Image 1 (cartoon, helix red, strand yellow):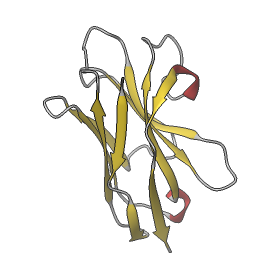
Image 2: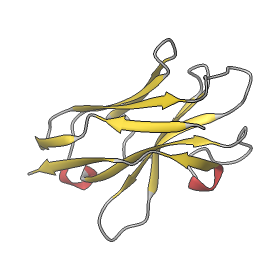
Image 3: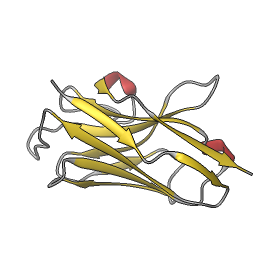
Image 4: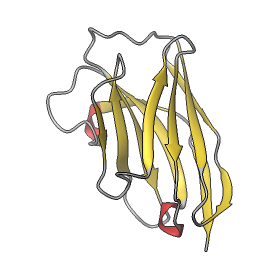
Length: 129
């Protein structure tokens, strides 16, 4: 059974940084699988939005326009962990962050949650102005 566990959330002031971690258990990343791991953001009263995604093996990566140039997704495959480095944070980045694993290779938009069937419990990020 695949399990994802997020950590690294917290409260920082605008302009600050956080690094989220997604530890993956029960499966190994496989460069030939075509599967992806993505981070999703959900703020109160809004729909969940894919913000960053990475294909097994480390490339390619994709970002939502709202985070390009500020967030970086990367993987440490020896540790079976994917990270989301978040810099220059703003109050709009506040919310829950979830990592998710795709159930197959993706032949569409990797930032669409329709491709993901395994989710972590989420980690809260709060940015104050």
